[in-house]
Image (cartoon, rainbow, N blue to C red; front, side, top):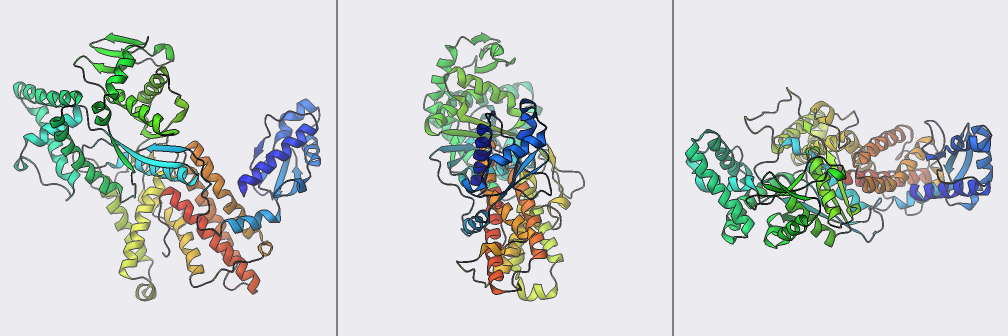
Length: 582
């Protein structure tokens, strides 16, 4: 309802300004100051005071006088406060919000008819997923969820780097060293098994004598050349390594959970000839130069000082060269392409975007969301293995263990015996622990470096995942065994706490739409914290099951059901579990 309400406010203010022959280019629509009984306000009087020749409060009063609330859906009382015109919603706004949120799919927008591909994670398949990169699948999955809720036809892709020197070195090492040459794997997972070969290969090249190093480098180069030439045997050798490691990595990612519709491999575009076609077109550009034994694009006239190298002297391509072919394929199949990528790739994507533009593509179709790193503070009880750092598996295991201990510490004997089985405790520990990791990471602006701290993430009292999850569990607890009537009188929900909660529920679809537009899922986390505060205020002040009469009890049950759908779906956008009990 908030989307419709905002549209009505915009139309009303624009009509009022037009009636007084005033410009409508900036309506000044914003949220009112704290304590004002309104949903939206207009500060347009500030802008127009000089043009009208009257003080802002007088301009605000004149604008308000021109508006007949009855002409617009959901507009209630219109008041002024100094230079602000404040807009409160009508009773229909609250009733229709309650009705809309009675649907378990509340917040999901009608189909837009547009397709979007969201590429995220795409970590090189050289070993287990590291904590520092955990932000990518968490943000990427939340963005994809928001786009899905906003009505887009979404596909989630993992772009697999199965070409280039790293994978050639990995393949050589896998085929060169024996199991006896390697330490025991740190976990019984395919990625932990094979990463031993990769590490062994790197250490060998660092320590071997010159002759041995040259021989190894020749074999690695032969693998790279075989991939470039489309040699089937070479491709199969590399694929065995890549797919095995990727299997282990996706097992880890599924714990978050983060799932993918397709794994798109770099070699796909090399084998199809698409990369060769890109090279031919790049070499024909005016910006193309051959310098320092490589083909490059001089992009200095386009504001990019560092040249874009797209073909080495030995005929091998680079990651971004192949990614151009990849993006051309995206443009052919999707209306919009979103890439979630680390901030260390900003220059690469500036070069990519500019080059795609030079090749004649509309880069308005392309969006990137850059993210900064996740750090762990010292002394947090996480083991850091030499040369490997902290793996995401370690973090998730630790999260579940800590959540289990927290849940058990809150259980009295009655709950332990009667309400929660061991299976319940394990389920809640998993939902809360992994939810705490996801929520704490996604709740920050992507471009800000964050330090993950257990005490904050698992705090049931602070504005963390457990704090929000508990609201959903509390809603479900109230509704357990209760029947919500189809017909209720929403006008009975007239206390400030009930109206505040309804207003917050009404905003959810708009939050989804904004996040899908701006690719900033932390706004959903911010919304859930506000929601939790509003629900808890309602819970404290407005008895539900012991309401003073049956009609009010029914209305409040309907409000709790609407709240459960809203907070459950908001958590779903974030990829955080919404426990039925805690």
